[in-house]
Each structure stands twice: as structure tokens, then as C-alpha cells.
Length: 194
Image (cartoon, rainbow, N blue to C red; front, side, top):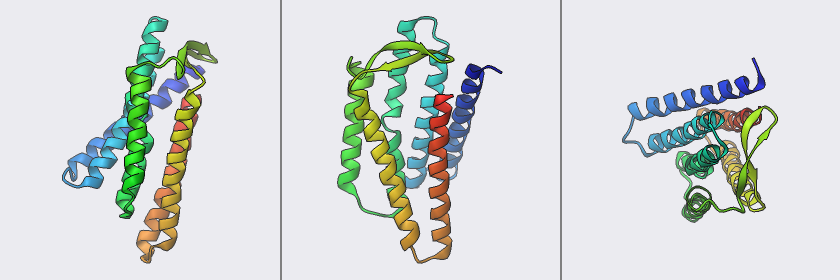
């Protein structure tokens, strides 16, 4: 298998798995807010991976650039929904942080996916084994910074709650979620770099 085929296979597995998990969770408790948040998070990860796959099959540069912009309709909300789900799970009230995170996500959707701001994505270029990869503009670092800060804040929240909760079972569940979330975020980043 070529590196491109490995990349596409990894993205396909991520897309299939997260889509399946989202549907499974919704079918087993649509009325629960936490289930809807988790499913939405899973659907956004699937959205990212499936658009990422489709981009590599674009017939021309302009089509690939369009697909990358469409991908960010979902990508911009991935860290925010991850944070919202964990805050809901741990029953912590952080309304101002959630509102701020959703607002920033909306701003990035506006800049990246709707307005196609040229200082975020300049163009697409071939890189390594990939036919198309977005060439980041000078403002793209602001999106990456936002993404990283929200994910770190989410993992920090999980870590703090796993240390402070009294129930041994709940503590073990939160620690397992912390480890799997940190592992999952790193796997997704590695799949994107394959």
C-alpha cells in the first residue's frame, strides 16, 4: 500500500467508526442532551474525515480548495463540541467559556468556510504523498491555537474531575475517558499527517 492509500484508509476508518458511534448513541437515547452532544461531536469528526478523503479525489485544484473550505464547516466546531460534551458530562457550569468557544467557532466558519479569507488558506498544493493540501496563510495559526487551547482545556477539565470525584467507579470512568480522549486526539492528528 502506498502512503496515500494508508492515509485514505485511516480517514475512512475514522469516518465509518465515528459515524457509526454517533448513530448508535442517538438510537440509544436521543432525548439525553449528553447523547446528542456526543453524537454531534462524532458526526463532525466523520464530516472532517470524509471531506478530507473526497479532497484527494478532486479532479482539479479549484475543486480541492472548495472541498477543504467545506470541510471546515465541521472542523471549526470539533473542539467546541468536545469541550461542551465534557463540561456536560462532568456537570460543571462554564457558560461563558462555552459561549466564547461557540462564538469563536462561528467566526472561524465565517472566515474559512463562507468568506474563504485569503489569509487563512491561500491555495492548495501537493505535499508529500497527498495530491492536495491547503497552503496555510498567516492567520491559520490563530485557528490552530484556538483548537489546541480548547482541547487542552477539555483534557484539563477531565483530569481535574477524575481527581476530585468521590466515587471510585466515576473516577475510573473519567480517567479512562481522559486517556482515550488524549489518545484519540493524537491518533486523528497522526492520521491527518500520514
